[in-house]
Structures are given as structure tokens and as C-alpha cells.
Length: 479
Image (cartoon, rainbow, N blue to C red; front, side):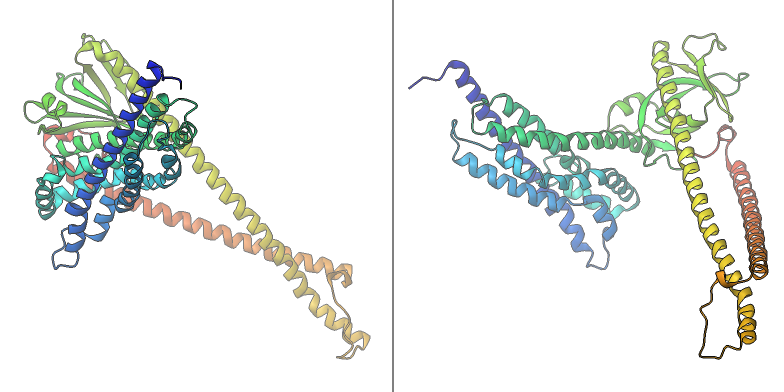
């Protein structure tokens, strides 16, 4: 019997350790998901039957999504893994087939990950708006089963789970000999999970960017509207000095760059830098101004202030001078601003082209429908004109009621056919004139409604302008 070589022994030891880590991490994950079910989800559902529900059914579904189904799937996975681990042997032990078979069930993570952004937004809104829910969450988070993790930290665990499987199976495949009975199954299961993990990682990046937008929104005061938007993603932030009037001195503040927006805010209290570097910080922001990147005409360096690292951003609404601090960060800011602005303009152009294509398609369909309608009217007009001629010809020929000759347009005389065509064309012309009049009437009504809306918006902003302080009156339009 050949003795195993040192490298084979080392690989077997690593493989043993990785399988043990897979089983242990699955136990931890299932225990945390069970804690979410017992401490959060089930009590919230039970409160629905009471007179004073903590949350509505819609909010509960929005926050926890399909977490129960995920927990059921992972319980099954854990049971099968523990069964194999209990009878583990280095030469015949295998878990690859389990992941290969369960990979299709892991697709239930997709709706949870897709809903995670919404779950984060709804939970934040409910925590800020309902003191009962905030007290309930605080009490549940203090339970020892949560192990000092908050609700947000627990909700993100399913988002991180499938990528974790991918990393562990990669290590397991690397330390499994190609001749091992488990090698092909691990390879196949890994390939399926990697495809799923790639999609989930993309959604996770979106979720993290959205979470940063939420953090800024929670600290922002005085903004015309909510900063939160489904497609908005945080890019970078930093201290700046800015002005929209060259006659005024530069005012210190902070610039926040998103994928579609540049916002300037000022520090309400000291320690904002520490607040944003520390998730537990309580620094407050006061809104100053913003500019939509899709509306920016140019972004370039400017020597107007005589200071290094000054950028000039020109749009139809404002001419902004932005001094980056420190000046060495100015090239990175310039590149980021130009990249995001170009992307926004391209997205806007693509959206306009899509709208144009849809409108053109609708117009073509409407035109085809009208042509078919007018063609039908021509036939009906010819039939209406030819019926009296048919009765006349019947009476002239002396045909009795039972002796009916088959009638068609081909039986008409040239004069009757010409008369029928003329009548049909006149009717079609009348229909077209009626369609045109109706279209003009709709356009007039829409224009009148637009004017009313513009007047209402102007009155609204004039009222807002009276209530704003001099510093906030210089702020541009709504986000």
C-alpha cells in the first residue's frame, strides 16, 4: 500500500478544515436567521391581530421579504451538511453534490436581494416615523441572540451568504485532488453558485451605495425634497469652498457627488468629518445648493480665485466655483464629475430616443389603424350607394322577391361605381377633418392645463421664497 505523500496529507488537512468552516458558518447563519424570525418577524405579525399593530402588513412584507423561505432552505442545507460531516472520511467524504443540488434553491435569494434596497428604506422610514417600532427594535436588538448586531446588520446577512458560499467552494476545489470523487460535483456546484453570486454582488454594491445615500439623507436639513431616489448612488464627498457669485467670498462646506447630482451642504455643528468616517456619528448638514449633472454644460479648472484646485461648473441655472480641499484631490474630483456628467447626459439622450421610438411606433400603429378604418368606410360607402341602384335594377328586370340575383360591387355600372367612390371619399374626408379637430381640441386643453400647472408652481415657489432665509433664497430649484 502506497503511503500518502506530505503534499497530499497537507491538502487533506486543508480540505478537512474548509469543510468544517462551511458547516460551522452555516450553523451561525441559521441561528441568526432564526433570531430574526423569533425576535422580529413573528412578534410583528402577532401584533397585527391586536388593536394597536406595531407595523402594517405591507411594511412587514417590505422589510423581511422572503426571509422565512430562505431560512427553510438553509435549514435543509444545514441538516444535510451535518449528516455528511458526522460520517466524514478524507477519502470518501463529499459535500459537492449537496451544493450542486441546492444551487437551484438558492435562487430564492434573488427576490430578497432585489428587495433589500426597499427593505432598508422602509425600515429607516418606520424607525424615524413610529416610536413604537423604534422601541420594539431596540428591545429586540438587546437580546443575546442578536449578539450585538442591529436589525440592519441582520437583514444584510442573506445578501452576503451566496458570495460566501462561492469563496468557500473555491477554496475547497483548490484543495481537492482532481481524482477525488467529490471534485466534479464541487466544480459543477461552484459554477452555478458563481453565476448567482455575480448577480447578488452587483445588487449588494447598489445596496451599499443606497445605504450611504440614506446616511446623508438622515443628516441633511433644509433640503427642498427628499434626497433619496431609487436610482441614485453615492460616489464621493469631501470638504470644499464654493460660491455662485464671484463678488462674494468663498464659503466653506462639503460637496457630495452622486451619480446624477452634485450637492453642496454646510456643517451645522463641528465634527462632521469624524461623523462621516464613523457610522455612529451625529453630524448635521444644512442644504446649500445642488446641480443636476445631466444639465451641466462644462466642467473645467478655473484660476478665477487665484487658488489651486478650483473647478468651474457651468449649467443653465448657475455658474459654480468650487475649490477642492486639499487641492491635490482636484484631479480626482474633476475626473469623477466629468465621468458622471457624461453618463447622465448619455442616459438622458438614450431615454429621449426610447421615448421617440415609442411615440413613432404608436404613431405608425395609429396610422395603420386609421387606414384600415378609412378603407372599411370606403367599402361601406360603396355599398350604401349601390343598394338603391340594385333595387332599381331589380324592379326594371321584373325580378320577384324569391328570385334574388347575387349582388356585388363588380355588378355595378361604371357610373354607379364612380358615384360610390365619390361618396366614400367624401365620407373619409369628413372623418379626417373630425379627427384633426378633435386632436387640436386635445392639444388646446393640454396647453391650458400646462399653463395652469406653471402658474401653480410659480405661486408655490414664490410662497417658499418668502419663508426662506437670505442664505437659502439663493438655492436652486428642487432636487
